[in-house]
View 1 (cartoon, rainbow, N blue to C red):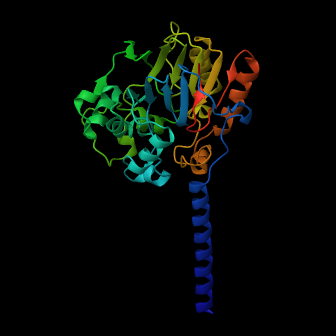
View 2 (cartoon, rainbow, N blue to C red):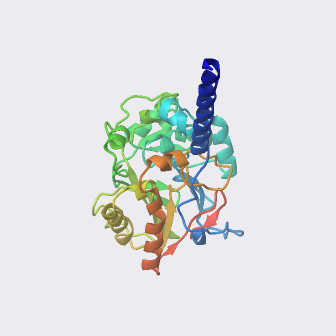
Length: 341
């Protein structure tokens, strides 16, 4: 009887362990639906007129802009480390993923790559992208130290000044110091935003949170064809964008659902109402861990389970679209060019 009871206990424990492992695998390897309206999706542009400005989107806040003469990129992030690696291990640029990402974007040469801040999902791959394309790495001193840690020569590193225009061919890019999205959870805020500077060369592999935020920028871009604004994170400084109107706003919405209604409304006011665009393109809504060779997904279910309010983002955006019929809401395809102007 004792042996039979022991076997039953072991069998029960084994069953519970199998269930727990299966649940963990499901939560870590499956994803929520994307938090954007399918009706907003635009098709790739089949014909590109001479001199047109195009945009390509990889995911998160990686955007490639070109007018046929000059091409430049925000972030240049193609690696997708897995959740457990991000939380408990060390990470470094995935060289194969960078090769694939550049090829899929048809990029061989860049004038610049500009990480919008210095977290790993924005700046980790940028020095390697700069090495391969001859690009100038633009950003804060923290981003410069990511470049130095990767061995990028100083001749390819430029620390930018707040509101100082940068000429890239016919593009004029003006970085505006802003704020990163403010995490409502105090522990997450302290870990991701506290002690913000990378004050020495950062050489990977390192922990994900060693990629500190640095400075967060909004980028105002002017071109003879049009004007646009890029917000890589759902943060704001009240009044900062007042003098920077835009035809298009690339609106960073990552984790925005987890904040309060008041925070979301203020972000909309500061990013969209102040700049008066005719088009809003949500970005940074896709998974940070999902592969980039498949259709876009929402966040991994494990993160969604821990992140309160992830279901509030889509209704918020849909409500803004309904309340602003003069603004077109658009989401971009992955990798393929879309005529912006």
